[in-house]
Image 1 (cartoon, rainbow, N blue to C red):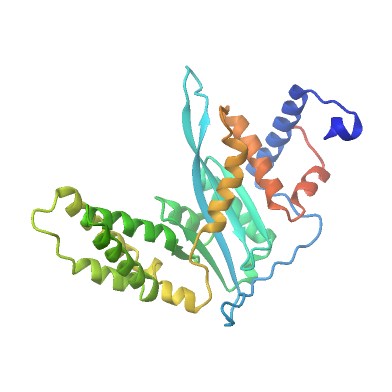
Image 2 (cartoon, one colour):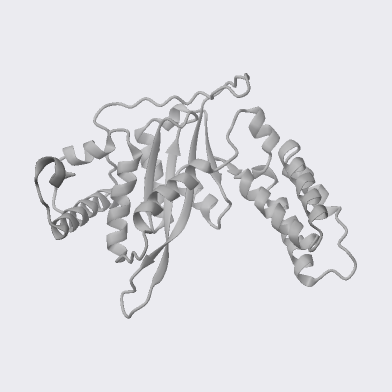
Length: 301
């Protein structure tokens, strides 16, 4: 664009150096405990939107945390080392405001979410709902670094996929029976919640001579919903007007993947962190990108 519109040519190496230096300044700023402050106050609306003509009382904010694999170059040797980059986000019920953070350390990502939650006044919301896929350690790290008062909801659509996978084992080779079981299980989960689904799963009688794989998955499914009854109460969530899907979080991951997972891309770990931090700031809007460049720029450590 610079070449076409202004006749200005910038070398690729210069672009790379400037980008890496800016990304390192931003990472160092985060490491020092300071987020980028918007140049002007940004007011978020935490009121719940109407659904099907029904209005809901209360004020709610949302957060999400997920991860995807980035191809990095090993410190020594050849080949590819895949590292999980965590994407965290805060957003309002109307999906008009979103702030993203990224980090290979999910503790650091969660702590940054807390800092931005303070910056954008999420304390004005009566409840902050964390919608996740139930990944290992996510609830712990969010409770410890953001707030112990978070309300946790498991993404309904991940749960539906889980039930379809179990149905495929339970009724292998019988597509009609497989579809019928999955449909009833999803109906129970959606209309009556995880406790009702657990009773349905516990009452299941496995076919004679069932393979050990099926028996093991049945045990896992029962244990899973015993532990997650309070995180799968979808009728109550919908009655309160809450979201039950992690679509914004998955969309955020796709935004970051578009920058970091191009065909043939291989990153140094530091380079992916630098570019990822800048991409997250740029995607956030809220005036943060311009505010970052407007603030006094100190040399990166």
